[in-house]
Structure formats: C-alpha cells, structure tokens
Amino acid sequence: MGVDNSVSVEKFCKNFKIEINRLTEDDMEFDMIGIDASIANAFRRILIAEVPTMAIEKIFMVDNTSVIADEVLSHRLGLIPLHADPRLFDYISVKSSELEWLPEGSQLSMAAPAQSGDKQKTFTSFSQSQKEILEKPLGVKFKDITIARLGPGQAIELEAHAVKGVGKVHAKWSPVATAWYRMLPEVVILKEIEGDDAEELVKKCPVNVFDIEDLGNGGKRAVAKPRACTLCRECVMGPNGNQVELRRVRDHFIFTIESTGALPPEVLFTEAVKILEEKCERVISELS
Amino acid sequence: MEHGSLDDSSSSTFSIMEEDHTLANSVRFVLNQDPRVAFCGYSIPHPAENKVNIRVQTTGDPAKDVLKDALQDLMVMCHHIRGTLDTAVADFRGNKPAEAMDIDLNKK
Image 1 (cartoon, chains in turn brown, red):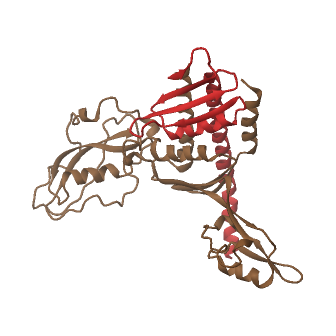
Image 2: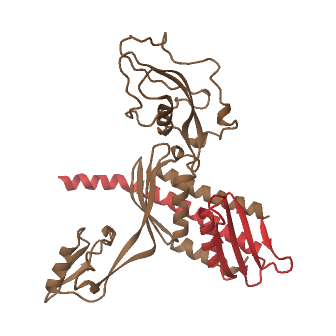
C-alpha cells in the first residue's frame, strides 16, 4: 500500500461535498462537488440500468374481450411502476418461462365470471402468491394510469406475476423516470464592463445571469446566477463577445433523480453507490 | 483474468467479464491518481461482448496489487459518498420545517 495513494483518497474525502437543493418523495436535485466525471457518470449509469426493481413479467390471460390485444395489454402492464420495495425480494430462481398458474386459481373475490351483457363493472384487484412477505398487498404506485378502456360487456381477467430485475435487461425495470447530471456553468468576465455595455449584456442574457453593481461613475456588471446559465452563448455573440468567457466547472455536478415511485430518490442513490461498491468487491475477489 | 508476462509483473492487461464503462472508467480514474502507475487505460474489445480490458503499467510494483489498491480506494470513496449523502439528507430534512415557516412569513 503506497502512502501517496491514500493521500489522494484523503484529499477527496476532505474536499467532497453534497448540497441538496430539492428533495421530495418523487425527485431530488443535489450538487456533488469535488468528484470526477467518471464516477458521477458511473452513478448515473447504475441508476438507470442496474438498480433492481419489481415489474410484471409473466401474465396468464384468462379472459380478454377488450379491444386491446393480449400482447399489447401485457406490454402495458409490464411498464406500470409497482409500489414494492425490491430489497425485500430475491431474484427469481426459476426461468420466467417456467412460471406456473397459482395453485388455487384466480383469487378474485367476484362471485361469478363476467358474462357478455353484464352491466358495465370494473374490478381491479391484486394479490401476491406469498402473502407472508408483506402485510400490505402489492399494488401499483399511481392508481390513475389507464391500462385499457372497456366497452359494455367486455372483460379482462388475468393473472400477473411480478419479478425482480434490472433496467439492463428491460427498461420496465428501471427505477428512475430518468436520472441526469449537468456540470455547473462558469461565467468569467475578462475585462471590466461599464455603463451601456453593462446594460446591453444584462439584456442579452435570456435567463438573467448578469446583474448590475453600481460603482461611482458607471454601472459595473457582475455575474449573479451562473447556475441558471443554459450556455446559450448569447452573451459571447456579437462585437463585444470576447468580454465574457463561458466554461464549465470540472468537478461540480448538478444531479437530478426522478424516481418512478418504488424507492425514494435518496434511497435510490444510496443503492447505486452500494452497487458500485459490490462491483469493486467482485473484481477484487476475482483477482485474488 | 490477467494477461501479462511471467518475469515482468509490473505491466499486464486485466480482462474482466460482465463489466462495462461504469466500472472501468471509474477504476481508470482512480488508477491515474496513483503515483505508482506509469500508464493506465481501458478498452471494450467489442460492444456486443460484455468484456472490458484494463491495461496497467506501473513503475515497478506488481500491476495486480496496484489494481487491487485502486479498487479498494474506489470502495472507500463510495463509502464516504454514502455517508456524506446521508448527512446531507438529514440536514436538509432538519432544516426544511424552518424554511417552510419562513415562506409563510414572506407570504404575509
């Protein structure tokens, strides 16, 4: 173990900062300062493709007299976000093509199957085959997603099996609506700008990055909100373009994570970091 | 899987299965911070195949050990990131009720 090596990690640990901007149940925006692009990108890739979730994988159709075809309906059902904590479940041990019907058959509490000509009635119910795992039954996160519209006399009866998987295999298992980062823009004023030039610059910017500070003789323009800058380059166009330089701060990442609901966004990020650690461990044990 | 020479253990190529840019780029970055490393890079031989080659050339130490150290450092960094995030979330949640009160005052 080289002493020099540990110094760079210590330097990282000392300089690394996280500042949370917004944190709600469904999304979060936070700043990571002092980290390299390769690691920030690794987290983004893991969030999108390698954090596991539950999604419907296998559907047994009993009755589908709706206008939506079986496979289209199944595809839609697979994409619905489920309100299930994937950490409580294991990956499936049988191949999905070997899943079987539930032994007691359909567990709907309807008295008799719907007949054509019945008055329009919609009935949605979920039941999981291992009731011991959760006290509350597995359900969808958002109850207002239209799966299929039924006309009079049409019915859909099916049995769906949800399976744990990762986004790499199919996008339905991705736990984030999306996750992205951008680097903090840096607006540098090369020469002092005064008076009319300053006003012109303030007007040029469509998102009001610049602000005017008053000096004794004329206005001096200062950069007020570099974070809002969209790098549209309006301020560097035209004859006065070389007064301002636009750059990005190399180690300041503004991360946004939008969760589909299975896990809250801060838990998702923690899981992504854990997965990167597991990858490292796996390679270390392979090397030994 | 390590591809190297038997007499010179300071340079070798590590071929890792079931990995891609996610791990390889991060490891490459950490390796480059190590002063013992003379050269370090990674490549993906074919995008359809889930394999990544990491080349490490050191100034004398065995390449395998240097790679292992880099992976350990990456794990330490991840651990630190997790801790920092937890603290930041706790702080944010602790401060939030105070901020909510401020907003009400402004509305009045």
